[in-house]
Image (cartoon, rainbow, N blue to C red; front, side, top):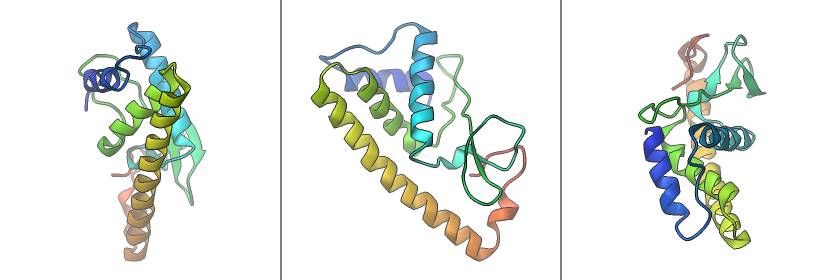
Length: 146
């Protein structure tokens, strides 16, 4: 999914409320805030790495780390997050931007529920890979796991 898609998705979530930042730099900062807040709560497979030379947000387990995601520079750039989490990013951003407290809470609650479901899938996937003995082999020191 592209940055433009995310902007359209966020616009639809904020109808009748505050609007998303129009300035590209402000929008990128809002996205970065959502990414870093989400990194404490969910483990996107695309962000897992064993490469300690990249900017690390947190330790995952074993030799794995959650790396800092790359921010898109152009409207057609692909987002650096698992596609299943793009709607969650939009909801999380909407919860940060919305003016009405109830709307903020609504978007945050839906984002949290989706993150819980996604993280359960990630844990099940990684456990299955560990049991097969292939999880360690799948991770390249320069590339994310997925």
